[in-house]
Image 1 (cartoon, rainbow, N blue to C red):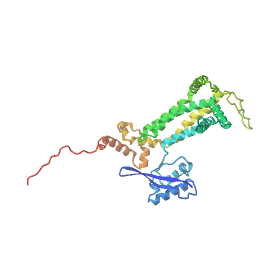
Image 2 (cartoon, rainbow, N blue to C red):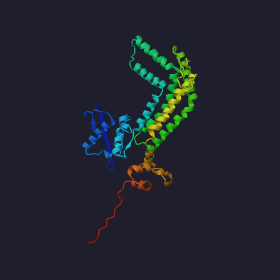
Image 3 (cartoon, one colour):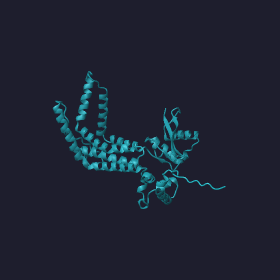
Image 4 (cartoon, helix red, strand yellow):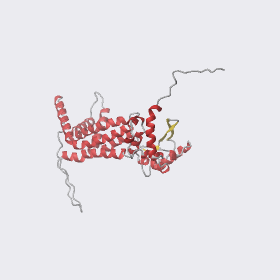
Length: 355
């Protein structure tokens, strides 16, 4: 049984409306392919006398059967309505960027697995609870996990990542946001991620200072636990040279350097690449729409509109770009007067003619 809700957003008499027209839960969906969902969507629209060809925009999640550019629902819609624009919720896209980061290397997966186990452990804890061997074993496992040097480095890396991503995420969820400002904040976040790349020594310094501070606190509390101050040196595993290979395997002997190359750089590069892939698709359309935002009218002058601007939105609307620019400049000049409500005259003169 599949469940799918269909919500229409439309404009009528200058008001934006949203209507839930179907909750496909009682329909027996035999297939979950993009084509099957598209046919279900088409059937529901036809029941309310609407055509798929009138769709100008659609938004689904990132599942392949919905977002696929060849066989996804959005692809089938574009085959019928060529001007249809597909987009994700941008705050959700940023979450997907973080998901990509958390799944790119094993040390990061281990950190979030440790976080999950720790949350479960404390959620099942009660005051004066008797500790059996299983609980003691789990506690020792968690202590060992949180005192590992690798865990601490990854934790500080994600502190920096969340410091960059959180303000952007909060703004993307703001009602009535400035889309141009949102795009700028995404670009700034990408730039900040890129600037993290040469900052690995700073990350190590922060982690070492934290370790020293916590160890001092643990000594004062007479706690036997101690945080690792460096990577433990392990036997270097070398891969056997296979037939036809010219270069021998040369693993990094320094574990700290290995972490920098195989974890730190990979996480940062994944963040930058995910932002590029997920946010760049409708970038030109968003830039064009920013010119149509009344909050930007005071900043618009004819020489401030680049030659390549407004082409995307003009193509979607089927209008001439030059004419659109001309009408935009004229409209923004008259907008202050147009937005004022007409007022009744303060005085009235009545003339009575002789009969």
